Length: 434
Image 1 (cartoon, rainbow, N blue to C red):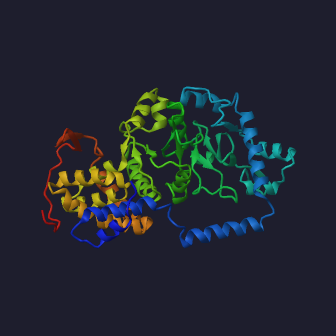
Image 2 (image 1 turned 90 degrees about the horizontal axis):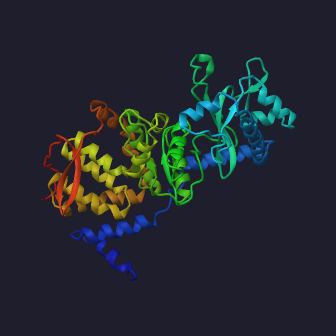
Image 3 (image 1 turned 90 degrees about the vertical axis):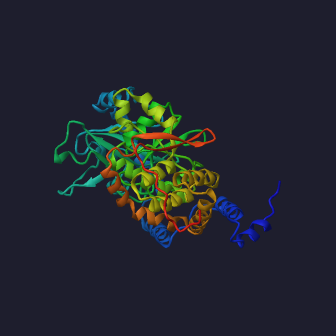
């Protein structure tokens, strides 16, 4: 049945009828696309366009340099230490894997440089693509040396690489554990996710903290879930938008089960929701991460955690009611709920009302205003909780169990509500009529 747009408009002006107004906000939410570029975004795009215009190298040529480099690394992979190391970590030989395409960057200073010169690649092109760098002596040397290497791809194009150092090399001269391609005209770390396969609509992307975790997710689930990871940084707006462009709105966040991972999950929520995502959260055993679970033969534990992932918003609401006074928890929970899709607002309303022992109509009235603010500018609405991340970290640090002990209490109608054992119900004074 067609919806008459006039009726919701009229109800917005009716302050005593919060239901239709919230329905109107739901219509607005459903019509929202991705956030408009900010002035900073536009300046960045213009600067990059200018850089390409002034460059003597074309995108196609730099992509070709990266393709030749990836082919060389893959040819060096068999019989290198990287092959048995990765096979042991993941329980399968990755040689020739069509999506992961693992490689090995030899330990020599100029093995790749020499190879590419023989392929007709100039030193300037190697520097521009980021596969080589200039040593203190002025000599051109390989950027990646003695590392297991994976290509970073987008739409089938190799933009750069991420390399894992030899596991026995922990001295200062070995460099960081993971090394990415530096910033180039073709590769911008904050723009791209490390993906371990294509992202068609029938697979679920799982956001993890590192490349090895991403590979573990994909292998442990046979590709039903595809691991994706930021490249040495926190999730960015561009990466959240990239997931949305693939048509995914319910990614799973499977960050490490430690304090840093729980804080990262909180931050991911506020980065993803302005782009229309409704992320879920996979609860891993304490002190573990996806790569460790697979390496220790517990891939089925990881797969089960992904299959049982629940809305990340629910976890955030739990945290507020466990650690904050009821007044503050209620307001924070409304902010979390307002960021979810409209079909989840009523469930969130009932949950908050039950926790506070207040009528759902009271919560619904308050939610309407928070939803309206989110609809006006999702990015701006997410800025405040992002600024408060350190407060969440402090709360979780005091409670190292991190909401580990959850009990179910009935809320009527056969449903249940999860809250931490020992959490005390307090009826808040919110200035609302009961």
